[in-house]
Image (cartoon, rainbow, N blue to C red; front, side, top):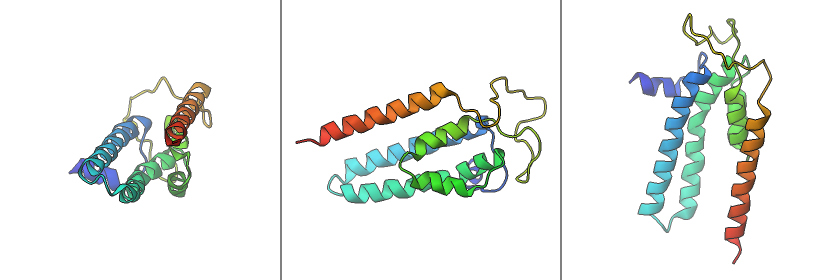
Length: 150
């Protein structure tokens, strides 16, 4: 039950290590439901798009808490769900280290004594991660456009 309550909480903070398992579960559920809908109802492709759009908003509570860890407003989570390239931005923000000290959203979610040797400086996103994610999205869009041609 704690797993579900953590999924939908919007208060407090969540670390990178706490964020990724929940985000992975959400992605798996969305893809499984997507596959199930297409398999069971192949004629409802437009309805399928609406359901996927709705499921995209499942990530809002997780993203809000991730932004809180970075001492940013959780409203950015909604913006990232609306933007077409929101997944790239989401992943870039997910890799940023949170504030070490307490901020207005709560205490640092890392357990006492836990160290994070991969912590990035505030505002720094690894260039390789950003370039790789952008390349993947561009490649997927290119394949999609090629497949649309008759």
